[in-house]
Image (cartoon, rainbow, N blue to C red; front, side, top):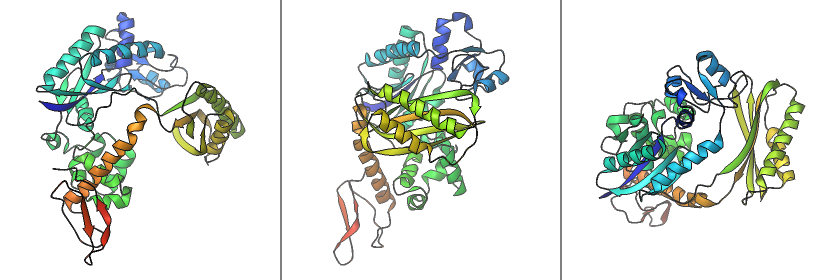
Length: 403
C-alpha cells in the first residue's frame, strides 16, 4: 500500500452550480461574471464547456465574451451560493477518511494510502456526484505537482495517473508552460535560452539556469521538469495570504489626481475590512489596469505590521507613486498581504524541503564548488566538502533528497 496524492478539481464549477439552480440552461453556453451585464466592464469568472468552444474563458472581458458569443446566457457572480456548495464537496472528501487540503472553492489535494488509487479516485468522484450532482476530475500523482498536472489530462469527469514512470512519455515533448508554476514570462525567457520543452528543461544545466533565474529558482525549474514536488498534504484550515479590494470603472479615469483619490477611497474600504482580520498587514500592493487591458502592480513593505487605516492609506499612496505610466485607468485595486497564520506557518518547512531538493539536485548531478572540485552524492548522509588544504569549503550540502 503506497502513499498517493490526488488532485480533485470540480468541472466548470461555478457554471455547473448555476445550471443546477437553473436546469433550463443545461446544454446552453453560460457565462458567469461581474453583475451579469455584458455591456458593462468586468471579466468572466467561469464559462461552461459550451461557451469555451467559442473561445470564452475565465479572465476574458465580458464585452469581448459577448462579441464572441452573443447568444450566451450571462449571469452574475453569487459567492454565497458557490461557497455553500464548495463546503458540501469538501465535507464529502473528508468523509472518505483521507487527508484533505483545500485550495479553493473548486479544488483540493487529497492524501491517501491505497493499493488502487484509481479505484479510490473513482469512488471519491462518485460520492461527490451523488451528494451534489456535480462532476469532478481526479489527477493521481506521487506528489502535488504530478497530481495537479494529471487533472488536466483527465478532464472532463475522468481519472488520470501521472507519475515518475510515465512523466516524460506524457510531458516530455510538451512546452515548458505545461508545468504547474511556469507562466508565459518564464517560458519566454527559457525559450531565449533554447529551452522549449519539458525534456529540454529537465536536461538543462542547473548552474546555467541559476545564473539567469537565481540560485534557488534556476535549479527548482529543473526539478519541476523532472516531476519533483511536495507530497505532504496539509489538512489545517486554509487561511488567505491577503485580502484586497478592487473596482472596475465603467469609464476610464484619465486624470491622475482622480486616480489617487480612488486609491485612497479603496484603501479606506480595505482598512475597514481588516478590522475583522486578526493578522496585521505586512505589505500593501496596488494594482492598476490601464486601458485597454494592461495590468501592473507595485507594492510597499510596511516598516512594522499594521492594519491601521492611516498606515494602509499611506502605503497605498506610496505604492501608487511607483507607477510611471499616466495612461487612462479602467481598474484599481488595493491588497493587504499578511505575514503568518494557519497553513502559512508551514511555509518555512516547505521552503526547507525545496532547499533540500535543490541541494540534492546539485549533488546528484555533480555541482561545482567554490573550491573548484566536483562531487557526486552517493548517500543521504550530511556531506561537507573540504578544500585541498583540509579547511571546510564554503559550500555545504544538506541530506540528499534523491535515492
